[in-house]
Amino acid sequence: MSEVKPSRRFKKDLSLNSLRGLESQVTSLLKALAKVPFFSNLPKGLLGDLKLGMIEGLSNAFIHGGSNAKRPAKLRFEALPKKIEICIEDSGEGFPFQAALRRRPSDIEANGRGLWILKNLFDTVGYRRGRPNRLVLVRKLTRQQRLDDAIELFNMLQEGIQQLKPKHHLYDRFMDFVVEAFNVERASFLIYDPESGKLKVATSRGLSPKLIEKIAVGSGEGVAGYVFKTSRPLLVNNVTKVGMNDPRPRRKGYHTSSFVSVPIIASPLHIGEETIGVLNLTDRRDGSRFSSNDLKLLNVMAAQAASAFRIRDLLDTVKQHEGLNREPEIVHEIQSRLLPEKFPTVGDLEISGHCQLSMRGGGDYYDVIPVGDGLRGVVADVSGHDVGSAITMASFRAIFRSMVFDPNSPGYLLQVLRWAMHEDLIKLHQFISCWVFEYRPSGVFRVSGAGHPPVMHYRAAQKKWSFLFSNHLPLGLEDESKPQNKKIVLEKGDLIILYTDGLFDPRMRATGFDKQKFCERVENILHLSTAELVREIVREVAPHHMALNNPDDIALLVLRRRS
Image 1 (tube, helix red, strand yellow):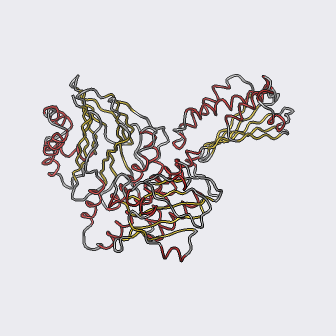
Image 2: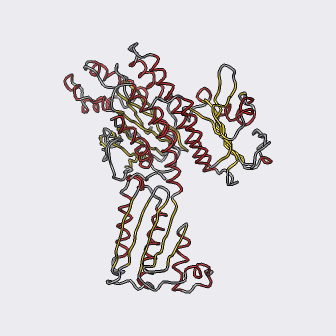
Image 3: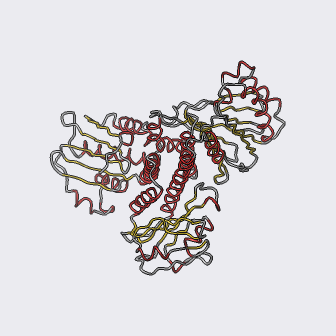
């Protein structure tokens, strides 16, 4: 069994002499748990269940277990990626646990309802009668484990990339991980071959060599061809009830009627030329069916794998041009591919952006993605100005895009990025500053930041600027504080500006450009559209920026709620 990392573990022991102050001690314990980044976004309902369970268990230790000042009740609380375990000990006579467990709710008297409450709050309830008596409560963290699985896959593939492992090695690692995670007997990863125009098996599990040789699927043919052509994942749990417009799979030799097929898309929000292959899974070892949650997790893993494969291709390109002094050109090419070509329209919000790449290149980046009736986005800056920085940003982008549809807050998404990128950033001696944000049509703008320059907010009604600062360290640096979600309500005409530090390089003050001059200039051109406003800002900054020796990149994103 692999050792749990300290950052993903929380342990606390309590010794109580009486019931006085019990609730406050339990509350303090849960607050300490929430300060651990890995557990900082546990659902409120789960925390409420844990609190009620601990209070109920400890109360029984005093009321029925004879605990007192001389024989204190003891509690051990341990949180791990897969579960939370609570152990409560008392020195009383104990009780026949199995008999009590079999009693129906209607049979339970007022003084026996505690056990029934605990059974409904926790996944498992165990009891050992003895000296001391020991009550063990376990609550599984299914969601945290699924997220941990996705992050573990990403880190595993990144390690292979850093070691310059060949792509077939990455394919095999990906396949083994997915087969174990979803507990399946049969799986295949098909890659599109441009020369033949067919999907061919890159790696598989549970398929015979003869069958593998025969597989050559055209776009639109069968399940894999359909998923490849449409870039739509497909989940079927009963082949007799396949939709009229969906393909019907061949089921010869398969044990179950449940299967799932997902596209491998290098950029999970683009289709067509970005779709590089298809992953198929079927025949779970326990005979169970795939669920919609399985499909969501598999989509996240597929997106992360596709990004890793694309990054490996970029490294091959770099290697081919070693010694030709083409690194700046390659960095520029990588960066330009990361940036969105157009911006979404959400209600009365205007969005425009620009990235000014320096001769050295680097890791400045922004992204805006429609999510439901709103949008989510990010502005980020990786330290350094080389291919490594550009590739790190490509990895950052892959995680952001694969998790952007998660319903949790921007702070939670920022925390996922911190967890996933931390080990690689430490190894590469890099860090990433960023703002992660979301906007709703009601005008609510929520944002969570890590060591990035402040968000600029122009209040049209008051004709005043305000600045929103991040209270957290950049990604790649240890920061155990809980991410904060800060809220701005945008009124009609209000402006939000997010940027990287190159926009206000202190050296530009010598040529007469600073933040005050910038704000004055923006106020004079507010009548322009955001696209025109961005172009005017870029034109204004350009001479000051280019006058610098080794100027930095500049990423600029402007959002305005139309009047």
